[in-house]
Amino acid sequence: MQGSGSRAERIADSIKDQVSQLLAFEVKDPAVGLLTVTHVKMTSDMGMAHVYYTLVGDEVERTKTARALDRATAFVRRRLAEDMNMRRAPDVKFHYDENLERQERVETLLRQIAAERAEREAQEKAEPPADDRAQ
Image (cartoon, rainbow, N blue to C red; front, side):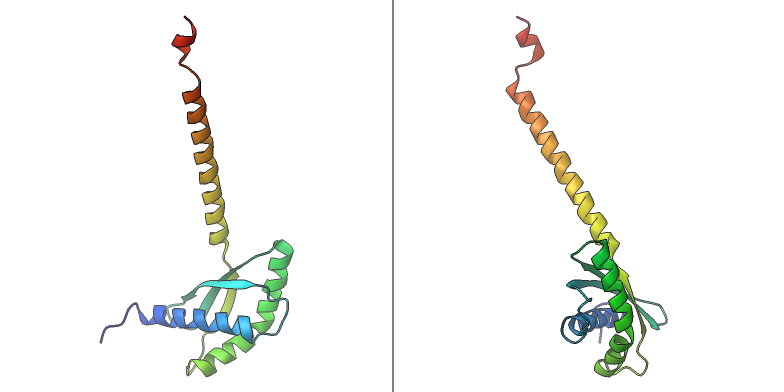
């Protein structure tokens, strides 16, 4: 039987789904804002799950959420062990996913460049060539 992806990838996907559900419905700390778990990376020994998330909010909101996630870590780990029937649940470490923010910034810059280029081309089409104006 051949599954899709490695065992670590399957466990990471399962942890991602489980942590998303726990944070949305079971963690009662209001400081855990509206966040999205973007991905999970497992260490090679499966002893640590690095959980990456993003959220809507400023730096203050990000700090509040990071502290709340630190407080919720033991609960999340215990629930993972129970829900996933694992002998030893991995340690859980939460990380704010800055890659998403960088990606959005790059996309914004690319859209601005494209708009400026289109505007410049439209202006060039609207102006007659320089040698036509000289006559």
